[in-house]
Image 1 (cartoon, rainbow, N blue to C red):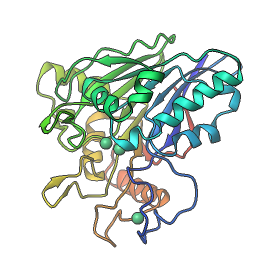
Image 2 (spheres, protein in one colour; image 1 turned 120 degrees about the horizontal axis):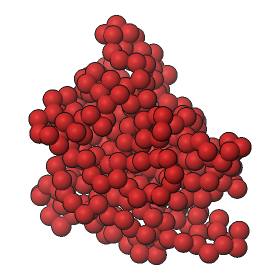
Image 3 (tube, rainbow, N blue to C red; image 1 turned 180 degrees about the horizontal axis):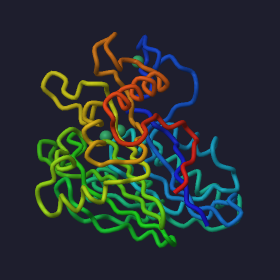
Length: 322
Ligand SMILES: [Zn+2]
Ligand SMILES: [Zn+2]
Ligand SMILES: [Zn+2]
């Protein structure tokens, strides 16, 4: 049995902006919101026997159709980093797809075990009540712990893999659905460990996660240690430099902050996710860059500044061995 992580999408919230003249918005190939699949294959290495999907924004179901065989259509777990639309917009599509796949095989549909934090659960229940009650089997993390807290591992019951959520700050999602002015920590990153490898999914985070660089409490030290020395660090790289627009936090980290977090966490490979660049000024570094431009530019900086390991932008559909 082998585990792998397949990249379903690495796009930012709006993917292609109608009317934007940049190269990124005018590309024609398939793109999707940030999402990965954690899969376990049988001893032949071909058949998928377990599948956990992390986030289900726009384009994700098309990615699954593109990168997996139809006979591998199954979903054992759905994990949400948070409730934002670019991480949940295809919830209906994934539920109906899996339900219909069961029908084609004359198997009963069983509700999909779904993990998220309590704040996110409340948002999803409001926005997607049909899917929530009819199609999902929610396993909620019942807390609103501050960023830098190691939460209980997800009871996935797949052998030789452990998935541990860690709370992170992502201020545009850390909102109480009952009162938009109140802060409610709702976002998680995931640490996926097999017997030999570790992957960290650290996306949709803002630059208020200083505990990563300078952990203060015992809990933060524990959380930062768990994020450290990963084989793969998937990280939010929204812009080249800009993190605040007119005094408001964008809710994401720029490449400047990615460098600091990567320096602190010492991964073997840093994989940039949620790329946009649109908050930069038109013509400035990062604005409207294609993935290949991002990759060339960040590789140069990585080498110049002797940052740990390797950096790149993952390709859609690629699978990393876990
Ligand atoms: Zn997002
Ligand atoms: Zn654009
Ligand atoms: Zn978000």
